[in-house]
Length: 560
Image (cartoon, rainbow, N blue to C red):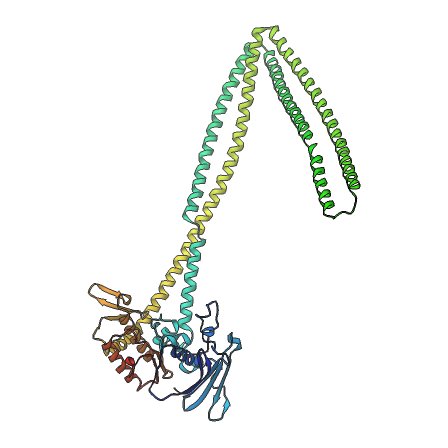
């Protein structure tokens, strides 16, 4: 395949530009800013089109970067020869790929042909735009490029099986994503530990309540024995008398509590009454505001009435609001007074009942002081017994709740452990599959590393006496030193460019098996020293006997 001619209608700063290509080397030596990179990008765009802008800034996206500076039709054409036939490809570009136009004309017939589609470069060379940029297109300052799946498939011969390498990479990527997801969704160690701690705390609390319950039961048994002994010593009626005394005391406490509650209610009522008085100021404040508004409107000619009428309206409103509020306040005060009276009556009744109970207790005490003390002791123990029995019921409730909580947490812990084991097992399987696939890819890659290394060593041997460069399975260049392999980033900028250029030339021989490509060199030798540059120009001259080369430079020192 070879280029015959091109015509640029408008592309970047280039306008109405024509050029006829020759076989071998085509050199463009022009000043900086002439448009050499623009020309190289145009050639690439004619075969591979232009990507959409996406989220890139205008100066970073090719489509917007090379919009014609002077306006007009954005695009041009290239005439090329392949397989004994001559074609003219015409492309024009718009703001988006949907607005682009493509036409392919067969020179022999002068008519449009469908021998190739808009995917012209891919159909001719068997590679995509990215691989073209990584191999035959040498952009200034961007010579380094990562190997992609398409390059791997061509180097390994897997391109015969469409998409296998790409599907392999996609499978590894998806499996790694699945592995991460399994790790994320698996119960965490701290979650399991927290659950275990909650169970331990619950069991400790359960044990504490059980101990308290047993202690209370022992005290109950002791109290029952004491009560039995006291009842026996003080006759048959002692228990009934002590119970009566206990009931009286309980009733007395209930009445005292009820009286305190009513007294608090009475205090609150009185407090509300004081607050209600202060609200009397509210209508006065409202009237002052209304008066201010009316006066303001009057002097602003917003209300058309004389001053006497305005004052009458204000006074009338004031009187109405005061009367309404006085009625409301009087009603509220009356209800409050009535409620307070009811509370006072209730308190008097409670005081009276309390006094009667006190008299009954005093009667018991005066009837028989010794017996009263015994009855009091029995009543106190009965009361203590009731409290302990109530505590035991409370402990039983707490023990039941804790046992239920512990059962729930233990069930949750079992589920978490089971889930963690299942997910870890799956994650181990996925990791094993990923390792297998990566090892398979590495073994496949080893098939092309040696041929690439030999070709690379041959090319760089013509430029430099340094034989220490090595390629790995990802075609990264390393330097073999006495203390081990070093990445090429340890080298000077010129040395880095040298190894990247040689790697690209080695790739061209290995990747393009379908059709010999043209090579675009966009001033890639600016960092090479004088000796290496001299040898590089000889190498380019040698390559030009086999490939058509477009060589773009801005200085005669790099001219051949």
